[in-house]
Length: 71
Image (cartoon, rainbow, N blue to C red; front, side, top):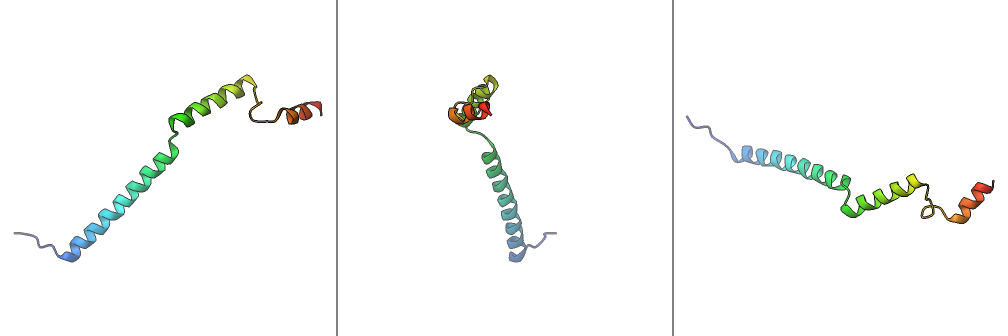
């Protein structure tokens, strides 16, 4: 025996598929936003290395650092 499908049933199913696709699209966008580009990753590594070495010259003007050390 064949099951009958109405246009309303098809429309409901299509709406459910669209909702699922929207959720997948949002998840992919979130993943892309949370993933660093190669350039960002390299810059982050450079900054970490400078901080580990105590080189803050690119982050704090030397004058302000000198003032803080004198206080």
